[in-house]
Length: 313
Image 1 (cartoon, rainbow, N blue to C red):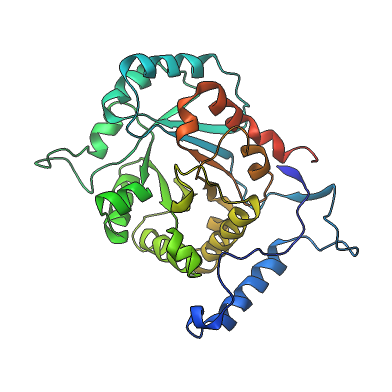
Image 2 (image 1 turned 135 degrees about the vertical axis):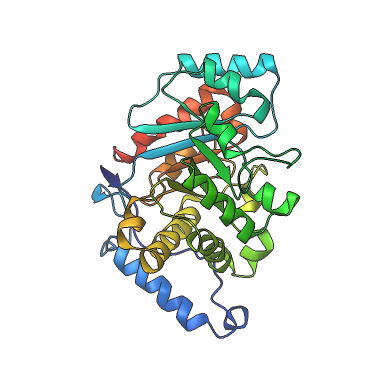
């Protein structure tokens, strides 16, 4: 799918350029930035002004993807109102749409929601079910019709205490059993301020890459922890910069085909007001939405932001 881009190259930088913060890696980091800048960007206009009306292909070849993570929210009544709103919403056809209700409502939502929208779990166990109090097995999720599971979300990492290797093993098991995985990565504020954004994201990616059987049913969700539920959102340029780096990491460490096909979506205070500008960026292939996904009309607006990739600004 072609899109009209208003983007011209230059990095705002989530990684600091100070050599003291890079511990002798500054030259390597600068080389890396120059490489992805030259490989994946349009040339600047000679005037130095933003390019207008330039046509370029999306960096990824996958279909736009929007997920709604309802987290630990809702009651029977509010959930069914939300389902009703989603069922009546007019959604663009060229978008994969997924919602992740709380576990206790999964079956009801799956039975009531339009087939246009798939259902995801918010977590799953590392292996086959059994004597694991409070856990949900992949087999149980498949039994009620779940197609996806969110793994590695920052709230699981930093509140529950799940580490990279544990999350990777959960992803591998889910994929082997036929569930798609929304694999979350992202840095804390102090990691970003220390110039470690890429290091953190690459380490989290490697934990998935080391164990997953393939990348065919994986969607990567970049969610800077400092932007989740805070009202702060990465600028389109900041988000694009990390998405480019993630895609380049996949190209170098997995394959060029996986880098092209894997969808890299953004999450972190995405709403109906900021989604269109974010969606214009070449490497943003969709969104993982938190609070705004609890409002049917606003979630529909975010889904339909795919149109921003098709028109000139």
